[in-house]
Amino acid sequence: MLKVALFTTTDTLGNRQEEFDRLIDSLKQQANVSSSIKIFILLQNSSEEVRNRLNHQLPSWVTLYTWPTQLSLSAARNFLFSSVRDHDIFNEDTIVGFPDDDCWYPSHLLEKITLAFSQDEQLDLLICGVSLRPIDPSWSVVGSPQASVPAVVRRSSSNSVFFRGSLIAQIGDFDPTLGLGTPNFGGEDTDFTIRGYIRSRRSVFIEHALVGHPESNVNSVAKYFRGTLLVLARHARHSGPFMREYIRKLAVGAYLVATQRMSLMEYQQSVRRSAAKIGR
Image (cartoon, rainbow, N blue to C red; front, side):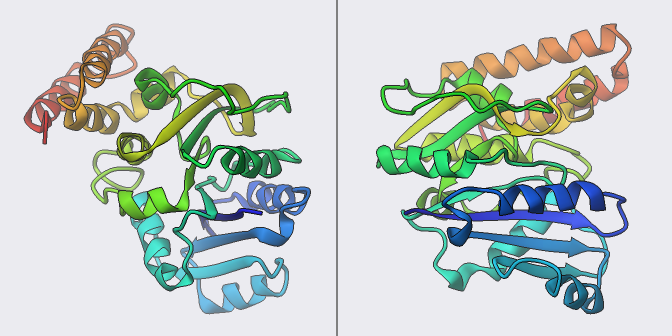
């Protein structure tokens, strides 16, 4: 059976203890794969004392790290990557995910995810939907078409993507200039997934909402607009579909300005910065 390696981070001062407990509880309930799960968690704004206390409360397949202050999301994930380099995780036999601390996996989800990667040895990337009411439908990657660029750009998030470990080894680290805690405030998930998509042997998008997490809305689109636009500019010259996604994002930004969800100054600054990045 394939193994599952998950990477997440939580701010111990962020009032998300209830959501964090829900994530851990959901992993305990994964049928047939609980013995093959490992989750690596960075506790931000934390200490060795807190880590030692939690170690006695959490399952043995949870590995905790601490950081005394707050890091950007990309920096936190890169720290975890560097901490597990010697664990031989990023290989063909491991599935990697990046759940947020307010995400949860319905029962049997990881069993089905590992089955999908087992059935299709060429599958390197699986993207699915998220919802506060995730469902458990019947689905299969067998015979499913290659994921489209619009699906990769518009539907991928840290909670909804699963990578084969060998693909992670090719992608490398998250971009430290992107994501929460950086001036660009987003886009790191989209960038990481696009880089994986370009390198993958096969990618599949499952439209069903399989993972528990709030869906994207207009406010979150405005919040993460700058980072996502920069990412799309970087990849715009890779192919026509990526260029069309960049142009579409410009139109989305204009709509956000027209509906007063984003300032004209913010839009203009984002457009100028993205234009300088096209094709880089």
